[in-house]
Length: 550
Image (tube, rainbow, N blue to C red; front, side, top):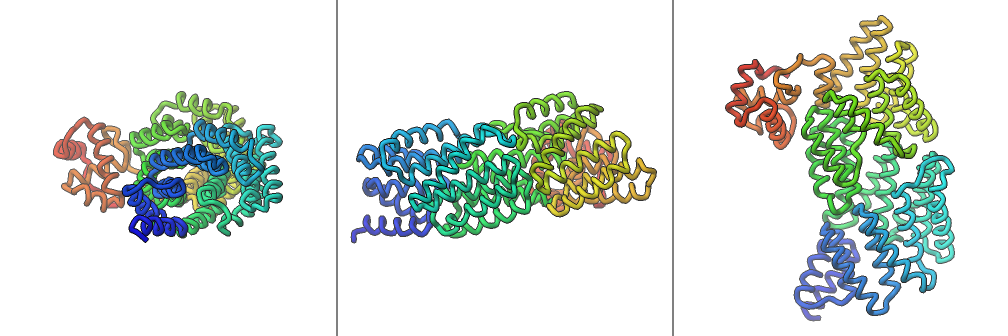
């Protein structure tokens, strides 16, 4: 065996065991010595995608597609077109994904029925789902998805292809989840994973199934199930050697859960990094990362950073709501915030609207729009009843309590708030738990129970401080209005800098990252109109912003 044959043999063995990095390195070395045959070039294109070089992978795979077609190997050409369609779908470009599905369709129409026909059914239905399938009960837009699921089940049975049966269960389960039956939907999604766990599905398609299940959990605020499936996906990724595309996606889902649990300092920088890494690999998840980053920054009082993150999410195709509207409200642009949220709600189906309705109730109450608050709260309660998940139930109870508080019906608000607090604790949702205690304080104060109100306020304030939710700390009892429009955290940073602390020492003192300190300093300089640390320190001394005990 010569050196080239040895390289190719090593590469093929590495590919077979899922060591994408070794496969990629050896195939690239072999390609540098001699032109690869179509089969080995196919392996290189796939390994290139797995190690994260998506652009090169797509170019290589398109070359492979044309070679298979030129050689008359139509079944392989069709499967390569389907794989390309899936990879473009994962990137978030549905138009190009649909184009590759159509190429596969033209080839397959003249071929005997095969597994490739099933993969085409799944890809078409997945594109249909993301192009506007309705979640209304019995909605006609879900009918093509259900029909594709039935055809996949039948095809899988006749061809004895369990991977097709699995894909059919995925589609049927997603349709049920969107149609208001999460229990039935997730039962099918759980069953769909059995062929995946048995290694009976190509890894690219298996990874998509894992991510699809996690997204479904997130959509219905089933965080317990989301944690379980994130764990399962991470274990699945461990079979592959080195960092792969799906590892980055799992990391982002894990960070989303970390953020819910209140580990904001740890999550913020890591989410920003994950978002940048996933752009071009999986834009669906990348835009979620930037939206999550915007939410963290908004809640921490970093207005400029939140705006930047929301803008990046929008560039990637996501409407950053309700976070952007809530940011506008905090900035005093309440009418604009209300208009933005109403526009975002227009035309959305019931499931997609669920995450916006609670914010809509909050804005309507703040603006004194009682009828609108009641209407949006009613919609959220109907959605929570239909889907029955703990997350939706907690959102609806919190929204109803906010409406009752605004109408002076404090005694009626209390049991709903206690129920919401119980559900949020079960979800490990720290910030939402604090908001509920704030509403409990208002209810107790309205009932003439100042002791209970003070205790609830203290609990909320303690959680907000632990999280670093500085706007909420200031609102509930932190230090008074700060000069220059500084936030609580910006004042802390400036005070330490004025005392001579380095960026690293400031980061250590405040339990934030070095990069976050730099971003805060940029915001501070812009707000107080200085361009150096010396001038900022002088300004801090002039305005009596000195380090304070924590």
